[in-house]
Length: 420
Figure 1: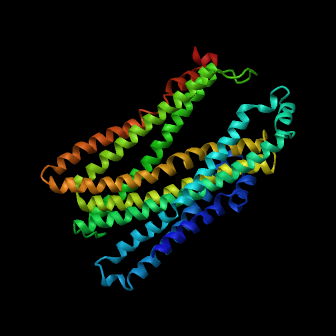
Figure 2: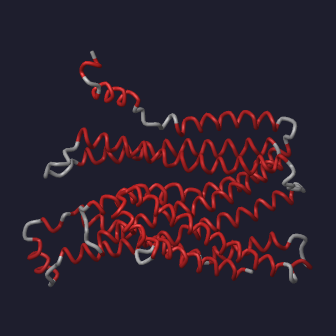
Figure 3: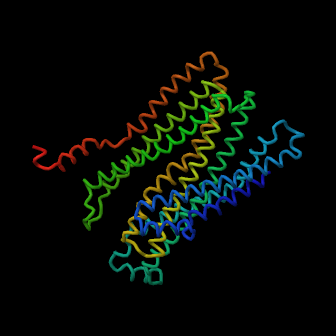
């Protein structure tokens, strides 16, 4: 049974390469789509890759979990009442057994990414007499173009490595969460019946929270990026050959950090309040809610991670293999990569702790609700209202206020006789 989890941790990364590697057919499809249809087809073809990847990885996980369930019914049922629940826990344990490999693979991506960034930002090739100094000190003549090409190829490999780690981490969260959810069901002796309205309501609510989270996390990225670009356009001359000041660069970092932290606080507030509120409302509703969070979160995370990976490596194919930087094709793939970054590096990876926290805190919240059953509904109502307040803040508090700008541009675009 444990080997099913270990096998999943080995098979899922290889499947991820099919959808995100620079050599994959899905990424190869993004490039011609971008050439002919521009950024719109770049985005659509990446979404297709993400959706297909979610389907196939879901099938693999279900298959291996079914094998574990089948094995648990041939001997384990003599020693315990619910062997299948224990089996799913062992599958998660098997996946975590590959944790060191997953962490090593995931760490490779940021190293290659930062190496390329350091090389580009250093502008070492523009330093006077740098080639002669390097040859004198280290005994070789540097070829900066070759070095840049190798770093970009390495960055493409790092993108693939990062992409392969994400579904494994999400899978461990979901399978482990499933085991803990079953423990709540067994602890409270619940019977989940699809004819029970509470079950259906819990499933629908869990799905809505996952989609709220995806929107709220990307909203923080959008607003932070907008404010950063707004500051750059007002204070930094991009057409100037002079280097940007350290003060301006620090201000851009401060702006991005500010909106990242604001988004984080809102998201944590919602997840905390909703978990406590729903646990206090009804145990059956809450168990269904947790199952829905795990199921919807699994597919949303895989879709967003692999769609982002496909967009990222499509841009690398254009830059490294086709050497078409600065062209219309490159601009289209840059748009795809810009969309993909919050997909793969913000929303998808953050669903992992969201699922884990909701389930773990849910165990404690259910215990609180059971021991304070008389006042639990009132506690739930209070925290639900507070949670809705954080939901409003996560969108409307982070929204870009562009209405005044639009009105100004509309009035400026009006013909003179209409304005009069």
